[in-house]
Image (cartoon, rainbow, N blue to C red; front, side):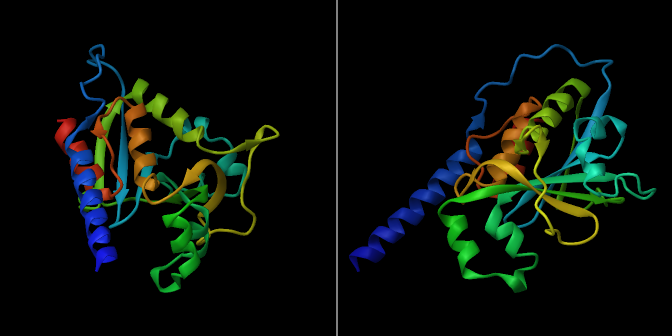
Length: 224
């Protein structure tokens, strides 16, 4: 019974921290920025499911300028129907070994809850339904987009001057996996990475957003 009591206390503490992490903004005060009136703007998307978030950038020459290696690695960035590039950061074992929930295995879950190497997942897709509640659209000044794109590009691990594609690992014909910087665990995982990238664009998130619902709500609360 004592162990159950401490387990309950631990779960309540995590819930409290998650709620507080959503309600406390990061940064605490809005950043001081010059007026963006007249500046070019860019639209980015936050894609979410119950446990994971990705970022989507419009697929054009400007975006490809930050990720010139994608075409060389075989991603169909020149396909006439390609419209968006989706970027996600996550745990190596869970990402690579769990293409669908039906293929969930114990070891990737254990690594996600402890510590795992990270990978980047990149996918090229066509038109997206922006009315889908799982898609959160944000329009930002071009300068903010540039900083965010550089931060995402900096998440790819570089060795001998090149990114490191993971051989023979993909979910289909339009996606690839790459080695990434940093380590993954459930408390500092994919959603905290997404939040960090958004802050590079001058957006405010919650102090700690381990779940998509927390991240999306904090974006809505703190960015108008």
